[in-house]
Length: 107
Image (cartoon, rainbow, N blue to C red; front, top):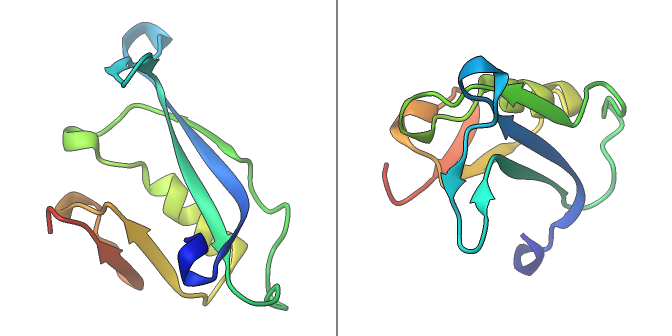
């Protein structure tokens, strides 16, 4: 993001829930991972229609099949910047969404 002129302005944390309200643990490099972070970037000035403070930055949901991300992440981004340009990196076929540019090696 930074190399393309974007600056990181915030993040959204997806806490992966499992059965019996425990965290879903996936193998990481050094630790077991129970979360994913979505970086929110901005290029240029803040758009006049930006809805700051319109959503929480934490989502607690059960992962879908094949690491499917919750739609709540896309909903938050679309609510934050209505009518904006949206991109999802590391996208998969099960996460394609109309109005988004999706980039990934599994498409």
